[in-house]
View 1 (cartoon, rainbow, N blue to C red):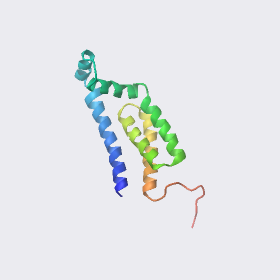
View 2 (tube, one colour):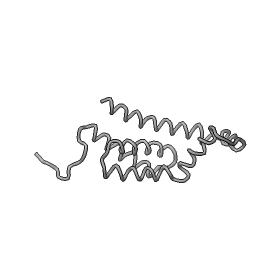
View 3 (cartoon, rainbow, N blue to C red):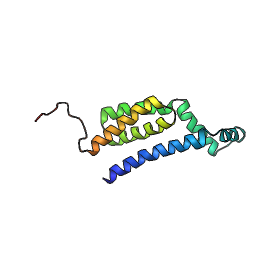
View 4 (cartoon, one colour):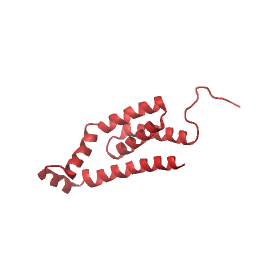
Length: 126
């Protein structure tokens, strides 16, 4: 039970951090203009890294890779990573691959928490 709460808390934290990055670092025009003038390490560097993560489609590629790994391994850790990257990608402009990654990760996590870790190849009918 504690593990499930931790997993869902991490997914919620990914949504919150991505939303914070989007609405506090990326979108405010006054912050962008202040970063045009100032150079060096700081919030402007963090802002640039966040922008590059979606402008180069890095979040999308990571989401696609984690989706494939989740489907083939059914690993809870990889499913959690897929859900986290998917959550961040949904907020940070990589909608299509992030949606697939998020849903795949969440479904595998939910299935693992229900006690059925992997689907059987044959259905047993009673």
